[in-house]
Image (cartoon, rainbow, N blue to C red; front, side, top):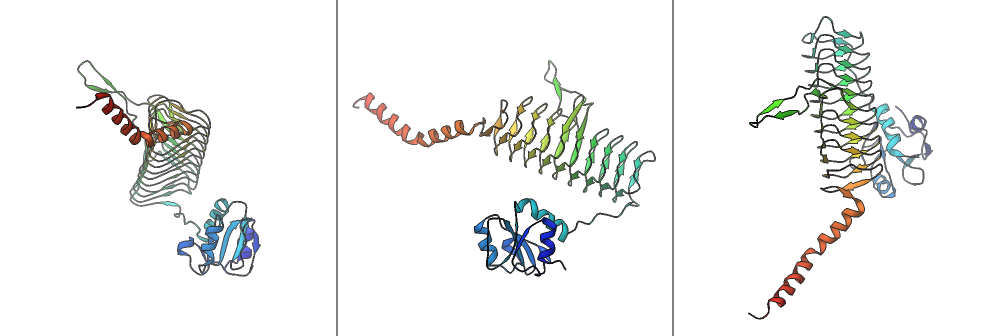
Length: 338
């Protein structure tokens, strides 16, 4: 069983306390068990950890304790995942093709892939080394799945679309469904505009459950390397998302929008088509965008405004009840007796 000394070596931590204490698992402070490693971001959480039976606490380098063995690091949020990987190693399915899977004869599969029950691999599809295509997944014709990528279950990658290396697509993800394109005729009937482009997902991308990335009308819808997408997100046709972007649950990105590298779109934010969100910008929850967001800006509300503008509006809204009373009093005086 690993000891605190072993854990310190794994994450290059400064060990303060008993180097021989044994560590069995990782856990949270509120449910810590004997032998657990937990992490505390500040003194408040460390105090809480000291009241538990945990074995070690991963903390910032500035914290001290006389009650617990500490592993002090620069940033516990970055170091603790290494302990999770070590103490809770992730099991990957063994290579092979399940007897119920349907694999086209001209699909190109690495010998190290794992294809789950009732998965469908269509003509011309390419599946990379050590990739996992889970139960019920569909990989369309001429689609490509990169090395070490996992499609968890019931994931659909439409024809011609490309998924990079080391990606993780959770259950119900759809990549490459038709973009929402229609043209109304003189009688108001909606004629479908065929979507003949593709969707391209870069390397090291994670996409949460039941999210949908539409294929382009022409060309490509793009999700850049390292981007992380939460559950229930919709990305419209011809959208281009940069590298290392965070897209939280419920976000809707309309067609042809561009999202800069390292931008953050928080829960249920939405935007009209053809907008640009700048590099490093942050769009706060439930914000509605109707104009471009500059690099590094923080915007709030609907319609979205900068922090300073939005706070002025909030202050003004707070004064409205009293202002209405004053207006009513002035009107009453102006009307005179009777």
